[in-house]
Image (cartoon, rainbow, N blue to C red):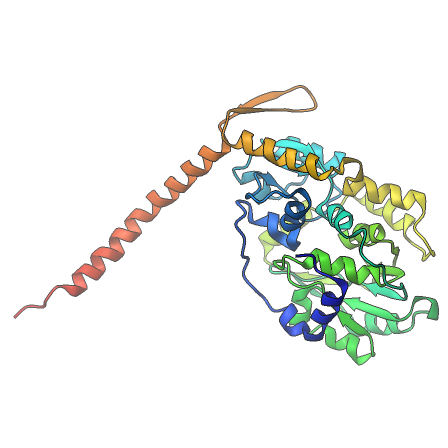
Amino acid sequence: MMLTLKQTLADQEDLASLCADRSLETDEIFPGNAYYGGDRILKVYSRYNLPLKVVIPHGVNLNDHFVWASEARIPLPAIFSFSPPRTRAYEKETNKVVIPSASPFLYLIELLKDQPKPERKGTIFFPLHSDHRVTIEMDFAEIAARLDDFEEEYKPVTVCLYWKDYVLGRHEAFRRRGLQVVSAGHLYDPYFFWRFYHLCSMHRYTAAHHYTSALLYSVKVGCSFFFMESSGYREEAEEAVKEELEDGYEPADILNLIKALFRDPIPKATPKQMEIVDYYLGTAYLQSPEGLREQFLKAEKWDKSLYWVQRSEGRRKFLIPTYYQRIIYYLAYLLKKIPEVLRNGLRGWGQRLPGPG
């Protein structure tokens, strides 16, 4: 199914349902592949319908050292990398074959390139967002007032909220100012990226007061991005989560470069802006449907055969097929569960015995 602009707009009529928390429904071995519907985009584009044997990063990180533990640990043979800095990180922190590849969002743009283009007007704004583990606290009323004070060139202003912030009631501050509130949906919604594309396609400008993957995605959709000065925020999370977030922070020099490039509103993205967007989204690695399918088939083969990984410095390492690693992990999990099953079974059996007399 190809989600249309018409359906995206219809979904905005019931944001409470669109943004309601939900469980993840996927047949992917690595659940993160299904975040934002990335796996569905790649499968539709390549006409491939098996669970992917490749890890698909769900965001666009700018650093060359941090890797999510879940991406590194999952027994799959390969991982996609959108940029050279991420390739260095994956080569250092994982035992996977690192495949230079384009972001799933670029493949979505290819799927939708022949769709009718709506008239662009105004600005769509992306606040720093909360999620399952982190709650963002900031002065939403003050932000709404500043958005309402935009010059006419940048109006009307639409606020695109992440699902968690809608659930937390952040939309109320913007609606009190008469600003339209929209959402691309839940992290686990398979059509999240599709809605994001359609919502951006209606606007001339996009804005945020922080670095976000939305900057890169929206510029590729055809928007001109600019930063709005931040009034500060606070993250509320458990200490372990805070440490993980700090490890994954974007390098200051890269952030400063991006902030300088996108500081001021301009009618159209410059070649220099597009260059950095293409660099981090992996535009140079965009495959044909047949090329992407071939990458998936190679990973399928590696999954069940001895394979080796070679790093840029020449180091090689042979690895056990990940298919059998998953079987071993599953058997170990069952063995750990046997005592619990036996205890519960014996307890139930004892309760069924007749009492004395």
